[in-house]
Amino acid sequence: QVQLVESGGGLVQAGGSLRLSCAVSRTSYRIDVMGWYRQAPGKQRELVAVITSGGSTDYADSVKGRFTISRDNAKNTVNLTMNSLKPEDTAIYYCKAVLVVVTWKYDYWGQGTQVTVSS
Image (cartoon, rainbow, N blue to C red; front, side, top):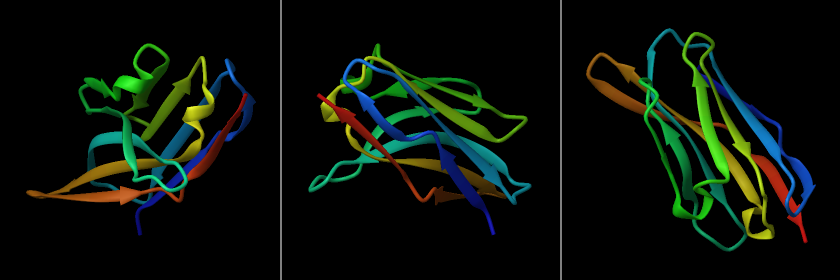
């Protein structure tokens, strides 16, 4: 059973920084895109940042210039460095990995980690 384990969430003051990490385990399949999503109370889950196996990245407009996504393909990990945090960044952050099995792609999600930014 593929497992995604996130870590690094917590409480931080506005303007502060946090680094989220996600490790994918129990798989020998190739990992395609990895990414971070978030869901605030009463809102839909939204994309924060994604990164391909080749290192191409894409970010939500709201986090561009503040957040940086990176990955280590050898370790099956993806990180999200968050700087200049704002109260509106408060949400549960979820890691996602797309695994490739022959010609099919499957989405796997982590359990989520809470990020709270106080004003």
